[in-house]
Image 1 (spheres, rainbow, N blue to C red):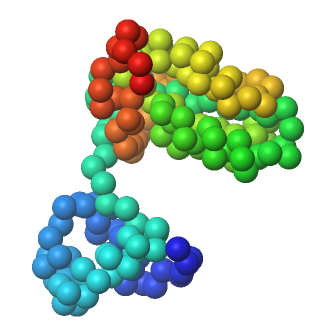
Image 2 (cartoon, helix red, strand yellow; image 1 turned 90 degrees about the vertical axis):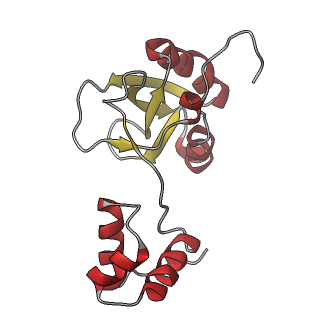
Image 3 (tube, rainbow, N blue to C red; image 1 turned 120 degrees about the vertical axis):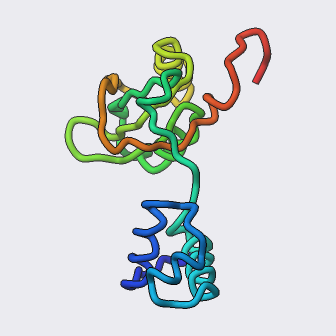
Length: 165
């Protein structure tokens, strides 16, 4: 996947898709004053380059079964920072992870469908399995604006402690 610069047409196309990811190619073409095949090829190029992903998003604060928290993580050493963010970002309750400046090394957004219990399991089971964590601090999201997220894998199926996996 090669990085590429977005031109003004790419940016306008992405802006329209951000407002309505289901907008038909014909309508996008009208707005952009180009042909529908050009729209489709542009979208395909953006998707295949890894710049764009069209997906359904959930308003986490309107979906009452979801709990959202931010967790600041301090590592024991920064030597393995790239490896640790890779490992942490693959945990099932993680929506996104970022290496940051400031008092934390990594900040993650945790989304659970089993309330505080899900956050507790993340902090006491999932995160310690990664290893190399010196400390963490969690912040429950009480209210947010413009907060659309991907539905996390953990929310797709109910938790059942008696079944493996």
